[in-house]
Image 1 (cartoon, rainbow, N blue to C red):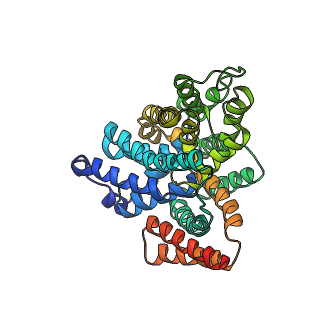
Image 2 (tube, rainbow, N blue to C red):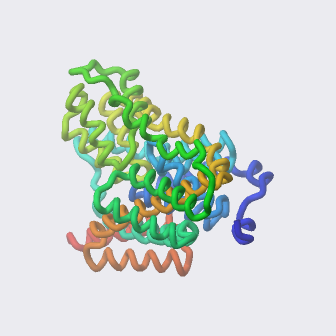
Image 3 (cartoon, rainbow, N blue to C red):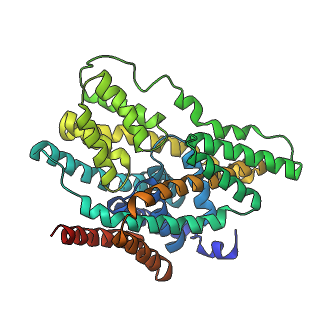
Length: 400
Protein backbone atom coordinates (compact mmCIF):
# COMPACT_ATOMS: atom_id res chain seq x y z
CA UNK A 1 0.00 0.00 0.00
CA UNK A 2 1.34 3.41 -0.95
CA UNK A 3 1.80 6.23 1.54
CA UNK A 4 -1.09 8.10 -0.08
CA UNK A 5 -3.36 5.11 0.36
CA UNK A 6 -2.26 4.68 3.98
CA UNK A 7 -3.08 8.28 4.69
CA UNK A 8 -6.57 7.72 3.32
CA UNK A 9 -7.30 4.67 5.46
CA UNK A 10 -9.33 5.48 8.59
CA UNK A 11 -8.06 4.60 12.05
CA UNK A 12 -9.91 1.78 13.76
CA UNK A 13 -11.12 3.95 16.63
CA UNK A 14 -12.58 6.53 14.28
CA UNK A 15 -14.39 3.79 12.35
CA UNK A 16 -16.22 2.45 15.40
CA UNK A 17 -17.23 5.88 16.65
CA UNK A 18 -19.09 7.13 13.59
CA UNK A 19 -19.41 4.43 10.97
CA UNK A 20 -22.96 3.14 11.43
CA UNK A 21 -24.49 6.60 11.04
CA UNK A 22 -22.20 7.38 8.10
CA UNK A 23 -22.99 4.06 6.46
CA UNK A 24 -26.74 4.51 6.87
CA UNK A 25 -26.74 8.03 5.43
CA UNK A 26 -24.47 7.12 2.51
CA UNK A 27 -26.27 3.96 1.41
CA UNK A 28 -29.76 5.42 1.82
CA UNK A 29 -28.66 8.18 -0.56
CA UNK A 30 -27.10 5.71 -2.99
CA UNK A 31 -30.18 3.48 -2.84
CA UNK A 32 -32.26 6.49 -3.84
CA UNK A 33 -30.02 7.83 -6.62
CA UNK A 34 -28.05 4.85 -8.01
CA UNK A 35 -29.62 4.35 -11.44
CA UNK A 36 -28.10 2.43 -14.31
CA UNK A 37 -27.47 -1.13 -13.12
CA UNK A 38 -24.68 -2.81 -11.13
CA UNK A 39 -21.75 -1.30 -13.05
CA UNK A 40 -23.06 2.21 -12.38
CA UNK A 41 -23.83 1.43 -8.73
CA UNK A 42 -20.31 0.11 -8.16
CA UNK A 43 -18.82 3.17 -9.86
CA UNK A 44 -20.78 5.46 -7.54
CA UNK A 45 -19.67 3.44 -4.51
CA UNK A 46 -16.04 3.73 -5.61
CA UNK A 47 -16.45 7.47 -5.93
CA UNK A 48 -17.87 7.73 -2.40
CA UNK A 49 -15.84 5.22 -0.38
CA UNK A 50 -12.45 5.40 -2.14
CA UNK A 51 -12.07 8.89 -3.58
CA UNK A 52 -14.19 10.97 -1.22
CA UNK A 53 -14.01 9.22 2.14
CA UNK A 54 -10.88 7.06 1.93
CA UNK A 55 -12.64 4.18 3.67
CA UNK A 56 -10.95 1.73 1.28
CA UNK A 57 -7.90 1.89 -0.92
CA UNK A 58 -8.44 1.15 -4.60
CA UNK A 59 -6.69 -2.19 -4.12
CA UNK A 60 -9.05 -3.15 -1.29
CA UNK A 61 -12.06 -2.06 -3.34
CA UNK A 62 -10.90 -4.17 -6.27
CA UNK A 63 -10.44 -7.22 -4.03
CA UNK A 64 -14.01 -6.87 -2.77
CA UNK A 65 -15.26 -6.41 -6.33
CA UNK A 66 -13.46 -9.54 -7.48
CA UNK A 67 -14.84 -11.60 -4.60
CA UNK A 68 -18.35 -10.26 -5.21
CA UNK A 69 -18.26 -11.41 -8.83
CA UNK A 70 -17.52 -14.98 -7.74
CA UNK A 71 -20.63 -15.43 -5.59
CA UNK A 72 -24.28 -15.54 -6.69
CA UNK A 73 -26.63 -12.65 -6.14
CA UNK A 74 -26.85 -8.92 -6.87
CA UNK A 75 -23.29 -7.62 -7.26
CA UNK A 76 -23.85 -4.01 -6.24
CA UNK A 77 -25.83 -5.00 -3.13
CA UNK A 78 -23.07 -7.42 -2.15
CA UNK A 79 -20.51 -4.64 -2.63
CA UNK A 80 -22.52 -2.45 -0.26
CA UNK A 81 -22.60 -5.30 2.27
CA UNK A 82 -18.85 -5.89 1.89
CA UNK A 83 -18.12 -2.19 2.42
CA UNK A 84 -20.32 -2.14 5.51
CA UNK A 85 -18.53 -5.17 6.94
CA UNK A 86 -15.13 -3.64 6.29
CA UNK A 87 -16.20 -0.33 7.79
CA UNK A 88 -18.06 -1.49 10.92
CA UNK A 89 -18.03 -5.26 11.27
CA UNK A 90 -21.19 -7.33 11.44
CA UNK A 91 -23.43 -4.41 12.37
CA UNK A 92 -22.10 -2.47 9.38
CA UNK A 93 -22.75 -5.46 7.12
CA UNK A 94 -26.45 -5.35 7.98
CA UNK A 95 -26.80 -1.55 8.05
CA UNK A 96 -25.11 -0.91 4.68
CA UNK A 97 -26.98 -3.67 2.87
CA UNK A 98 -30.38 -2.82 4.34
CA UNK A 99 -30.00 0.90 3.71
CA UNK A 100 -29.04 0.31 0.07
CA UNK A 101 -31.97 -2.03 -0.53
CA UNK A 102 -34.73 -0.24 1.42
CA UNK A 103 -35.10 2.98 -0.66
CA UNK A 104 -35.15 1.01 -3.92
CA UNK A 105 -37.68 -1.44 -2.51
CA UNK A 106 -39.95 1.39 -1.32
CA UNK A 107 -39.81 3.12 -4.72
CA UNK A 108 -40.59 -0.18 -6.47
CA UNK A 109 -43.45 -0.76 -4.03
CA UNK A 110 -44.91 2.63 -5.01
CA UNK A 111 -44.72 1.62 -8.70
CA UNK A 112 -46.45 -1.67 -7.85
CA UNK A 113 -49.24 0.16 -6.03
CA UNK A 114 -49.74 2.47 -9.03
CA UNK A 115 -49.71 -0.53 -11.37
CA UNK A 116 -52.41 -2.36 -9.39
CA UNK A 117 -54.62 0.59 -8.45
CA UNK A 118 -54.17 2.92 -11.41
CA UNK A 119 -53.70 0.32 -14.11
CA UNK A 120 -50.42 1.71 -15.46
CA UNK A 121 -46.83 2.54 -14.63
CA UNK A 122 -45.74 6.14 -14.04
CA UNK A 123 -43.85 7.41 -17.08
CA UNK A 124 -40.10 7.78 -16.59
CA UNK A 125 -38.69 8.09 -20.11
CA UNK A 126 -37.62 11.72 -19.77
CA UNK A 127 -35.89 11.13 -16.46
CA UNK A 128 -34.00 8.12 -17.77
CA UNK A 129 -33.06 9.97 -20.97
CA UNK A 130 -31.07 12.42 -18.83
CA UNK A 131 -29.77 9.93 -16.27
CA UNK A 132 -28.19 7.40 -18.63
CA UNK A 133 -25.55 9.69 -20.23
CA UNK A 134 -24.48 10.77 -16.74
CA UNK A 135 -24.16 7.12 -15.73
CA UNK A 136 -21.85 6.49 -18.69
CA UNK A 137 -19.53 9.27 -17.51
CA UNK A 138 -19.58 7.98 -13.90
CA UNK A 139 -18.69 4.43 -14.91
CA UNK A 140 -15.97 5.48 -17.36
CA UNK A 141 -14.33 7.59 -14.65
CA UNK A 142 -14.44 4.68 -12.18
CA UNK A 143 -13.00 2.29 -14.77
CA UNK A 144 -10.13 4.68 -15.41
CA UNK A 145 -9.29 5.06 -11.71
CA UNK A 146 -9.67 1.39 -10.82
CA UNK A 147 -7.76 0.34 -13.92
CA UNK A 148 -4.74 2.35 -12.77
CA UNK A 149 -4.62 0.16 -9.65
CA UNK A 150 -5.67 -3.16 -11.19
CA UNK A 151 -3.46 -3.18 -14.32
CA UNK A 152 -0.23 -3.39 -12.38
CA UNK A 153 1.74 -5.36 -14.99
CA UNK A 154 1.76 -5.96 -18.72
CA UNK A 155 0.63 -9.51 -17.98
CA UNK A 156 -2.52 -8.31 -16.22
CA UNK A 157 -3.23 -5.81 -18.99
CA UNK A 158 -3.10 -8.60 -21.59
CA UNK A 159 -5.42 -10.77 -19.47
CA UNK A 160 -7.85 -7.85 -19.13
CA UNK A 161 -7.91 -7.41 -22.92
CA UNK A 162 -8.48 -11.15 -23.44
CA UNK A 163 -11.31 -11.12 -20.88
CA UNK A 164 -12.91 -8.16 -22.65
CA UNK A 165 -12.71 -9.88 -26.01
CA UNK A 166 -14.11 -13.14 -24.60
CA UNK A 167 -17.11 -11.37 -23.08
CA UNK A 168 -17.71 -9.41 -26.28
CA UNK A 169 -17.84 -12.75 -28.12
CA UNK A 170 -20.52 -14.02 -25.75
CA UNK A 171 -18.57 -16.12 -23.25
CA UNK A 172 -20.34 -16.59 -19.91
CA UNK A 173 -19.32 -14.03 -17.27
CA UNK A 174 -18.44 -16.62 -14.63
CA UNK A 175 -16.23 -18.53 -17.06
CA UNK A 176 -14.43 -15.29 -17.95
CA UNK A 177 -13.82 -14.49 -14.27
CA UNK A 178 -12.68 -17.98 -13.29
CA UNK A 179 -10.55 -18.35 -16.41
CA UNK A 180 -8.80 -15.04 -15.80
CA UNK A 181 -8.05 -16.02 -12.20
CA UNK A 182 -6.65 -19.43 -13.12
CA UNK A 183 -4.57 -18.12 -16.04
CA UNK A 184 -3.09 -15.34 -13.91
CA UNK A 185 -2.14 -17.81 -11.18
CA UNK A 186 -0.56 -20.25 -13.66
CA UNK A 187 1.39 -17.56 -15.50
CA UNK A 188 2.54 -16.08 -12.21
CA UNK A 189 3.65 -19.51 -11.02
CA UNK A 190 5.65 -20.12 -14.19
CA UNK A 191 7.20 -16.65 -14.12
CA UNK A 192 8.28 -16.85 -10.49
CA UNK A 193 9.00 -20.58 -10.29
CA UNK A 194 6.51 -20.81 -7.43
CA UNK A 195 5.51 -23.97 -5.64
CA UNK A 196 2.26 -25.83 -6.35
CA UNK A 197 -1.11 -24.12 -6.33
CA UNK A 198 -2.62 -24.30 -2.82
CA UNK A 199 -6.12 -25.65 -2.20
CA UNK A 200 -7.41 -22.13 -1.65
CA UNK A 201 -7.45 -21.81 -5.44
CA UNK A 202 -10.71 -23.71 -5.33
CA UNK A 203 -12.50 -20.44 -4.54
CA UNK A 204 -12.67 -19.80 -8.30
CA UNK A 205 -15.11 -22.70 -8.50
CA UNK A 206 -17.34 -21.40 -5.72
CA UNK A 207 -20.27 -20.78 -8.03
CA UNK A 208 -20.23 -24.11 -9.89
CA UNK A 209 -22.12 -26.38 -7.44
CA UNK A 210 -24.55 -23.58 -6.75
CA UNK A 211 -25.32 -23.15 -10.45
CA UNK A 212 -25.82 -26.89 -10.96
CA UNK A 213 -28.12 -27.34 -8.00
CA UNK A 214 -30.93 -28.97 -9.94
CA UNK A 215 -33.15 -25.96 -10.55
CA UNK A 216 -34.66 -23.27 -8.42
CA UNK A 217 -37.80 -25.13 -7.33
CA UNK A 218 -39.26 -28.50 -8.27
CA UNK A 219 -41.48 -28.22 -11.29
CA UNK A 220 -45.17 -28.31 -10.52
CA UNK A 221 -48.25 -27.12 -12.32
CA UNK A 222 -50.65 -24.52 -10.93
CA UNK A 223 -48.96 -24.51 -7.51
CA UNK A 224 -51.18 -22.89 -4.85
CA UNK A 225 -49.85 -19.52 -3.77
CA UNK A 226 -48.65 -18.89 -0.20
CA UNK A 227 -46.31 -16.40 1.44
CA UNK A 228 -44.06 -19.25 2.60
CA UNK A 229 -43.68 -20.65 -0.93
CA UNK A 230 -43.08 -17.12 -2.24
CA UNK A 231 -40.28 -16.58 0.31
CA UNK A 232 -38.53 -19.86 -0.43
CA UNK A 233 -38.80 -19.37 -4.18
CA UNK A 234 -37.08 -15.99 -4.07
CA UNK A 235 -34.57 -17.21 -1.50
CA UNK A 236 -33.50 -19.96 -3.88
CA UNK A 237 -33.35 -17.54 -6.82
CA UNK A 238 -31.08 -15.23 -4.80
CA UNK A 239 -28.87 -18.19 -3.88
CA UNK A 240 -28.18 -19.47 -7.41
CA UNK A 241 -28.46 -16.53 -9.78
CA UNK A 242 -25.43 -15.17 -11.61
CA UNK A 243 -25.65 -12.57 -14.36
CA UNK A 244 -27.82 -9.66 -15.41
CA UNK A 245 -31.46 -8.73 -15.07
CA UNK A 246 -32.11 -10.67 -18.27
CA UNK A 247 -30.91 -13.86 -16.55
CA UNK A 248 -33.28 -13.02 -13.69
CA UNK A 249 -36.10 -12.75 -16.24
CA UNK A 250 -35.38 -16.27 -17.49
CA UNK A 251 -35.39 -17.70 -13.95
CA UNK A 252 -38.65 -16.01 -13.01
CA UNK A 253 -40.44 -16.87 -16.24
CA UNK A 254 -39.67 -20.58 -15.96
CA UNK A 255 -41.53 -20.99 -12.67
CA UNK A 256 -43.84 -18.03 -12.10
CA UNK A 257 -45.31 -18.03 -15.62
CA UNK A 258 -44.75 -21.42 -17.26
CA UNK A 259 -45.00 -23.81 -14.30
CA UNK A 260 -47.11 -22.22 -11.58
CA UNK A 261 -49.21 -19.69 -13.51
CA UNK A 262 -48.85 -17.11 -10.73
CA UNK A 263 -48.15 -14.32 -13.26
CA UNK A 264 -48.89 -13.58 -16.88
CA UNK A 265 -46.11 -12.90 -19.36
CA UNK A 266 -47.05 -9.21 -19.49
CA UNK A 267 -47.01 -8.85 -15.70
CA UNK A 268 -43.54 -10.42 -15.51
CA UNK A 269 -42.13 -8.12 -18.19
CA UNK A 270 -43.60 -5.10 -16.41
CA UNK A 271 -42.03 -6.27 -13.14
CA UNK A 272 -38.58 -6.61 -14.71
CA UNK A 273 -38.98 -3.22 -16.42
CA UNK A 274 -39.70 -1.56 -13.07
CA UNK A 275 -36.60 -3.20 -11.58
CA UNK A 276 -34.57 -1.74 -14.45
CA UNK A 277 -35.89 1.84 -14.34
CA UNK A 278 -35.91 2.35 -10.56
CA UNK A 279 -32.72 3.14 -8.61
CA UNK A 280 -30.83 0.55 -6.60
CA UNK A 281 -30.62 -3.19 -7.23
CA UNK A 282 -32.51 -4.76 -10.13
CA UNK A 283 -33.51 -7.56 -7.75
CA UNK A 284 -36.24 -5.27 -6.37
CA UNK A 285 -38.22 -6.81 -9.22
CA UNK A 286 -39.10 -9.29 -6.47
CA UNK A 287 -40.76 -6.47 -4.49
CA UNK A 288 -43.04 -5.70 -7.45
CA UNK A 289 -43.93 -9.36 -7.99
CA UNK A 290 -44.54 -9.91 -4.29
CA UNK A 291 -47.00 -7.00 -4.20
CA UNK A 292 -48.87 -8.30 -7.24
CA UNK A 293 -49.24 -11.72 -5.63
CA UNK A 294 -49.69 -10.91 -1.95
CA UNK A 295 -50.01 -7.18 -1.37
CA UNK A 296 -47.65 -5.43 1.03
CA UNK A 297 -46.94 -8.64 2.95
CA UNK A 298 -46.00 -10.38 -0.28
CA UNK A 299 -43.69 -7.49 -1.23
CA UNK A 300 -41.87 -7.69 2.12
CA UNK A 301 -41.57 -11.49 2.00
CA UNK A 302 -40.29 -11.57 -1.60
CA UNK A 303 -37.76 -8.78 -0.96
CA UNK A 304 -36.39 -10.48 2.15
CA UNK A 305 -36.21 -13.81 0.35
CA UNK A 306 -34.22 -12.66 -2.70
CA UNK A 307 -31.70 -10.55 -0.75
CA UNK A 308 -31.11 -12.79 2.27
CA UNK A 309 -28.59 -15.09 0.47
CA UNK A 310 -26.44 -12.05 -0.43
CA UNK A 311 -25.95 -11.23 3.26
CA UNK A 312 -25.09 -14.85 4.01
CA UNK A 313 -22.62 -15.23 1.12
CA UNK A 314 -20.80 -12.01 2.02
CA UNK A 315 -20.69 -12.97 5.70
CA UNK A 316 -19.07 -16.28 4.76
CA UNK A 317 -16.68 -15.04 2.06
CA UNK A 318 -15.71 -11.60 3.43
CA UNK A 319 -13.33 -12.79 6.16
CA UNK A 320 -11.44 -14.93 3.61
CA UNK A 321 -10.39 -12.03 1.39
CA UNK A 322 -7.46 -10.72 3.53
CA UNK A 323 -6.18 -14.29 3.89
CA UNK A 324 -6.35 -14.83 0.15
CA UNK A 325 -4.39 -11.64 -0.48
CA UNK A 326 -1.60 -12.85 1.84
CA UNK A 327 -1.16 -16.03 -0.22
CA UNK A 328 0.97 -15.41 -3.35
CA UNK A 329 -0.99 -17.87 -5.49
CA UNK A 330 -4.43 -16.89 -4.21
CA UNK A 331 -3.40 -13.25 -4.55
CA UNK A 332 -2.58 -13.87 -8.21
CA UNK A 333 -6.02 -15.45 -8.70
CA UNK A 334 -7.60 -12.39 -7.12
CA UNK A 335 -5.58 -10.09 -9.39
CA UNK A 336 -6.86 -11.98 -12.43
CA UNK A 337 -10.46 -11.90 -11.23
CA UNK A 338 -10.13 -8.17 -10.51
CA UNK A 339 -9.02 -7.25 -14.03
CA UNK A 340 -11.67 -9.54 -15.50
CA UNK A 341 -14.30 -7.78 -13.36
CA UNK A 342 -13.22 -4.45 -14.83
CA UNK A 343 -13.35 -6.01 -18.31
CA UNK A 344 -16.98 -7.06 -17.72
CA UNK A 345 -17.80 -3.54 -16.51
CA UNK A 346 -16.19 -2.11 -19.64
CA UNK A 347 -18.25 -4.35 -21.95
CA UNK A 348 -21.50 -3.44 -20.16
CA UNK A 349 -20.58 0.26 -20.39
CA UNK A 350 -19.85 -0.03 -24.12
CA UNK A 351 -23.25 -1.60 -24.86
CA UNK A 352 -25.07 0.85 -22.60
CA UNK A 353 -23.22 3.76 -24.21
CA UNK A 354 -24.22 2.72 -27.71
CA UNK A 355 -27.87 2.59 -26.65
CA UNK A 356 -27.70 5.80 -24.61
CA UNK A 357 -25.63 8.40 -26.48
CA UNK A 358 -27.88 8.55 -29.53
CA UNK A 359 -28.15 12.27 -30.29
CA UNK A 360 -26.47 15.62 -29.65
CA UNK A 361 -28.18 16.43 -26.30
CA UNK A 362 -27.28 13.03 -24.79
CA UNK A 363 -23.68 13.33 -26.03
CA UNK A 364 -23.41 16.80 -24.51
CA UNK A 365 -24.78 15.51 -21.20
CA UNK A 366 -22.21 12.71 -21.13
CA UNK A 367 -19.30 15.06 -21.95
CA UNK A 368 -20.42 17.71 -19.47
CA UNK A 369 -20.83 15.08 -16.74
CA UNK A 370 -17.34 13.71 -17.37
CA UNK A 371 -15.90 17.23 -17.15
CA UNK A 372 -17.71 17.97 -13.88
CA UNK A 373 -16.59 14.65 -12.41
CA UNK A 374 -12.94 14.87 -13.42
CA UNK A 375 -12.24 18.58 -13.27
CA UNK A 376 -14.53 19.76 -10.47
CA UNK A 377 -15.14 16.47 -8.62
CA UNK A 378 -18.88 17.00 -8.39
CA UNK A 379 -20.64 14.31 -6.36
CA UNK A 380 -21.95 11.63 -8.74
CA UNK A 381 -25.31 11.31 -6.94
CA UNK A 382 -26.13 14.97 -7.53
CA UNK A 383 -25.04 14.65 -11.15
CA UNK A 384 -27.47 11.76 -11.62
CA UNK A 385 -30.37 13.74 -10.18
CA UNK A 386 -29.39 16.82 -12.21
CA UNK A 387 -29.20 14.74 -15.38
CA UNK A 388 -32.69 13.39 -14.71
CA UNK A 389 -34.13 16.88 -14.30
CA UNK A 390 -32.42 18.05 -17.51
CA UNK A 391 -33.71 14.97 -19.32
CA UNK A 392 -37.30 15.73 -18.28
CA UNK A 393 -36.86 19.29 -19.56
CA UNK A 394 -35.38 18.17 -22.88
CA UNK A 395 -38.08 15.59 -23.60
CA UNK A 396 -40.84 18.04 -22.65
CA UNK A 397 -39.33 20.65 -24.98
CA UNK A 398 -39.02 18.16 -27.86
CA UNK A 399 -42.63 17.04 -27.45
CA UNK A 400 -43.90 20.61 -27.07
